[in-house]
Length: 534
Ligand code: FDA
Image (cartoon, rainbow, N blue to C red):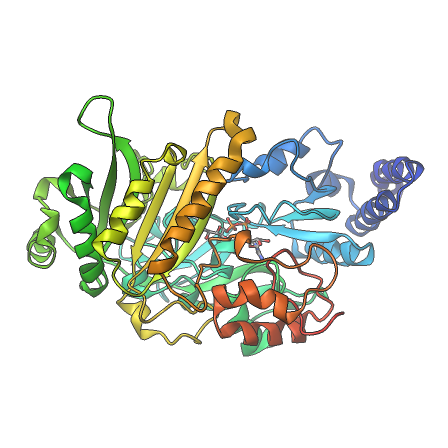
């Protein structure tokens, strides 16, 4: 008992100091911490679970997984506390106390949200960071795995590769991305043409709802289970872990990169790629990354398209296939390398391949400052249209800009639009995404880079999906619409961004939200709202 009193003492002091400082915010902050400390009731646990602003570790815990450093400046709103639960009861207590004291909760797994919504809010908030929920259990016999939300994709791939070379999982390309946010928004990667999305392979999940109940697939019911597989994080509850079906891959796969620039007929080759890439055999994935690079002529810049591929087979089978179907690329054997599937993830993620341990390195992908947007393309863009967007890369603001074209077709063509919340399936030739970055010292001029990407996006409007202009939820873009920062957001208002991400599935997502979280406890600028005001 004495132990308990000591453990609570620092929090009571904070409560007193904050209360003396006057405002209601200080009361709710102090009350929240008091509530939580009473629930945790163990001093050693408290110091490992709650990081307040006066804790010397606060900043390092906050910054540990911020991928877009646009949201780690002194001006970025900071949480009142970061909670790093060690067990599910800590999460239940956090829900209870933040609800009771009116604080917004931001859930963070890998911290890769493009707009920083897992760790930034304009209203008083706390972060629930799942960094201690990162177990990966792989069962090769049954070809399934349980993975906790705080693990990264790299940790999942590493866990699979440690047991077998013939199983894989069709999720994202970048190893540092967190499971929690990625699975919640769909998740595509280099196996998208062969197997579809990560969400297509989730067979069970463990979720804590707004009432603190722990649910699995059976107890949550099929509507909620449908919604959490792509309907977006921070809306329906906190997903602790996911049961996934693994997919077969050959022991040896082949990768290649072929670069073509403006002086090497890139416009024509890109134009051809649009007719070919989505129709290739499902075992072959060829994406395109476009950037500005130095030209072979001294002092000049050019625009380069990197055609990067994964083939689920050996090089001797790949070369004749590409020579027949895409001769314009001029693929040669020396462009290709054979490796295991896990190594190919590092290759396509442009990460060093010194060892598979790189999959576990949270800094393997450099952290940058960026703004991004996405589109879906259903008709080939004419050469004149391609020339137009390539020329925009020669502008000064595009020094750190890139465009990624991800071919669809294959499995994506077979899955109905309403199977899961992610609707961008049949009829899409490719998904396009645009990113612009800048240096930290240029933060004061960020406006000119953001204007560049908005102009680029306007230019692309002629060539991409319309009514709605579709966008990928996991490439979050607050330019396409947002909920009210505080107070109720109507169905009509949320429809502006909701139909772009989910098309008609948005309606079902709103119904599920109304059923499971009518008080709208889990919310952010692009969370699904309930139908009526709580
Ligand atoms: P983060 O922790 O920031 O969470 C994102 C959202 O999900 C937030 O709203 C958060 O509150 C919510 N959330 C997180 N955990 C939750 C949980 N356990 N329960 C409920 N809600 C939760 N995408 C892709 O499909 N393929 C790819 O190859 C890539 N590659 C890629 C590279 C890089 C460098 C970045 C920055 C991003 C990508 N992405 C991607 C996009 C990525 O899928 C997207 O940003 C995910 O939401 C990231 O998930 P995290 O858990 O890392 O983010």
